[in-house]
Amino acid sequence: MAEKIPVELGTEKIGTLLRQYAVPAIIAMTASSLYNMVDSIFIGQGVGPLAISGLAVTFPLMNLSAAFGTLVGVGGATLVSVLLGQRNYDMAKKVLANVFILNVIIGVIFTILSLSFLNPILRFFGASDATLPYAREYMTVILSGNIITHLYFGLNAILRASGFPRKAMTATILTVVLNTILDPIFIFVFDMGIQGAAIATVISQTVSLVWVFRMLSDRRKLLHFSKDKFSLDWKIALRSLSIGMAPFLMNITSSLVVILINNQLRRHGGDMAIGAYGIINRIVYLFIMIVMGFTQGMQPIAGYNYGAKLYSRVTEVFRLTVFWATLITTLCFVVGMFFPGVAVSLFTGDPELKAIAMRGLRIDVCLFPIVGFQMVTSNFFQSLGLARKAIFLSLSRQLLFLIPCLAIFPSFFGVDGVWMSMPVSDAIATIVAALMLSSLIRTFRAETILQNVVKENDN
Image (cartoon, rainbow, N blue to C red; front, side):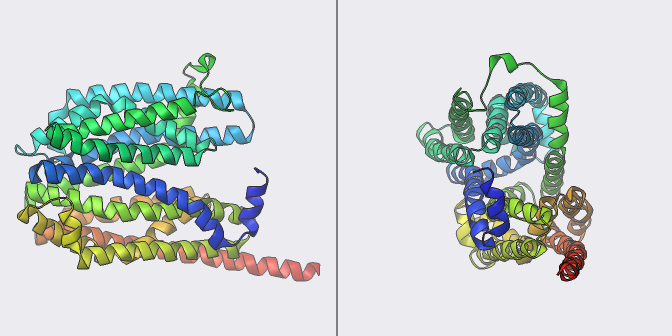
């Protein structure tokens, strides 16, 4: 089977391949997005608009936690894939053990530091006197289970990389289902408010972690936990961390942007504007995750055919992925522009919060159809091993374009300036992506012409 898959990547119809590779990723990404939405919906409906604002304030801290989890998980999963391909099973087991140890160490340090300075951190992230109690109550529970969160995401990435993507997907879906069941129980039945939502989250992740841990403890599998491998190897640790540095930096940048957005919203619109952003973020995130599922499906197909110099197939999978991504982002545009009330009503019935969120959503998604192209192009460069260009495209949208817009526009347009910053930065990032892509496509055409000339000479 291991020898058959690459052959299929170079010969099977692109549409068939994209469907086979993208569907599991889309399901996993959608489940992950729904997992985040569930808390917001139940908190908004069961606790109130200020609780939604308090939850929105916690996003940067949760992103930071996820960033450190990604730092370990992505690097470890990549190493495991390579080592299993080399049939170096002993070293793969050692990497697995090191991922476990590193997640525990980093999780403990992150938890202690965050809990020790939780109030000033949340203030810095945009909390006010009214929203701080909600944010603190939620994050105290979440941070107490931070080690579980780190281990769950890290080990699930290893499970996926070791040849069990469906089991990894099942673990994600299990977490979503449990959280959906437990949220209303803790919030409404036990009347625990926002703290109940946090408890439901930690319990759901704990159950999934136990399931993943059992999968990786099965001695019948090539990759499993071994007692003799449980020692921290600094070479493995540093290599894992270096591989995971790119997604780590992207998550850190994302956290910094959210902090800036929250503070600008608090300055120009108050707590309700922050709550509105929390709602908008959850709605848009669902569509973004689906697009990311398509880009994950595209990556192995584009990468293999690029390595095989089958450039027509590379461009075909890119175009097909852009088509589906644009369809999804256009659907988000339609929902945000024409049905914002329906989408926002899922999260809150408060008239003031609903009005702010509806206006913000309309502005935020006004250019959203072009976002699919920008996202696919960025991941396309990554698929071809052009990591620097991929990182530039990913970070430039936030660092070079969005942050300056957020610093300037609100001074002239108030809260609307914050919402406007997002489509403007999307438009500029899309133009840059198109210019970089056109250069790459010209290279493909030149290589294809050269290949044809060589073939004619050989004949």
